[in-house]
Image (cartoon, rainbow over all chains, first blue to last red; front, side, top):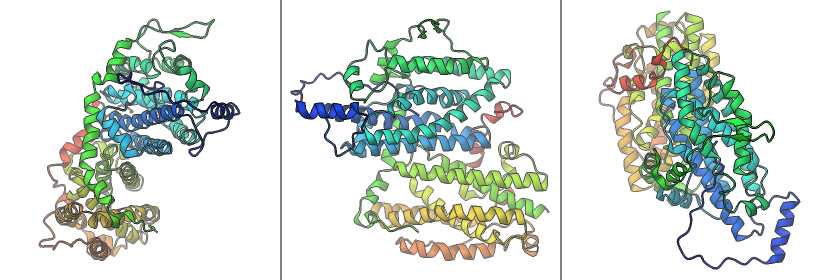
Length: 331
Length: 250
């Protein structure tokens, strides 16, 4: 899944240090490489801002995968049959694997995994807002598996064409796996949509709950987003929030409607001339409140993660001794 | 043949319940790599349970795997007590995985020669999977047994707790003699000897001590439907969604 389109940047209240002045010749050569479609690799020269933005972006993406495994993970033990149970374990496992892959990609930029996880736990580093909402019923799991994964694919496919080699390669692998997640999510979604009245009601209620978080997922309108232009020139950000949201509506509104389910918004319409979707104001104040930590599940998600870190501490300490650090081939 | 049915149910139920327990680690492991490892093993175990229920369904007229797994009462389950225990902390889960998977490997290695062809065939594949589970368990037993003072103490404590429970793995089904006579299975007593021979050197290499077996039948009962207090809540959780409408397709 799970990198939201929106990369959060704290507004700093601290006195800003002098901006790094980059060598203009190097900067021009860097831009030229990107324009030629070359990938930037870990040992290559890169502007300080480029490195900083990428770390922020990949780290938030990785955290989103790890925290994102929690709302669905709690349903693994309740999945209603073998097929769903097996698929859900495999799917959530993939998400953890994506987190692992992304932490590794981010480490190539100089920030160790431990430090990233500490920043997650302290609240310094963010993750996608969408995971601060609860998965109330089994139908919520199918909505996450279908629509949130779909939204994430729109974003990740775009970013896989970006300029930083390790991130792009990680994303290519992630997207291939996500394609299967989307299939299993769609399959479970269709089963509920075409099932009993009770199942359809469950599903519609879940879609109603997730509509707003899905709109928020891509981030505020382009008009509100800072720094977008430079990041797009460097191919760190590959598509605008509005464009990605529009692409999502184009692809998935019909798929939701064709099974008799709908989004709870009478103003969700496509302008046939511009091709742009319009929708009711999704309450951006709520979006910023959730980022600040005031969403329905922020505290719970971090508490679970902290539990895992604290109860696993003795294992990590044991791994750091000289005996355990040596690797013996397994087979 | 009732004894063969019972036998397949014991293995399937053990794997379903332990797979379920292992899956609870998804997202909560001490390091990401272990989240992923426990999820993989959970998938193998749940998958194995499914295949055994499928054999019972197609060859012996038992119910569909989904109905069998999600629609039986606690007393109809034949799993051993070891797999029912909550995941606890990583030490207990790891030691349980070590004890159980060594037994499972020895069992399926035996079953590759079973006179029941479908079971023998399945066992070849399963043995291949279990080889990796055992490698994983052995690696971690040694790492943590020889890690810090705390990890060593924790592993020994977990071993002392789990080892008596592991005796329940080898509780034979009624009329086991029938299985032995037909060449379906060599019997739990033989299996247990092989198991002890395979875990002892690893425990020693991990710097741990094999607990003494005072009474090897204290954790019996699972094969006859007598369970710990942990199974009923597990089943309630597992069937929560299914029970909303058992006739619906999910």
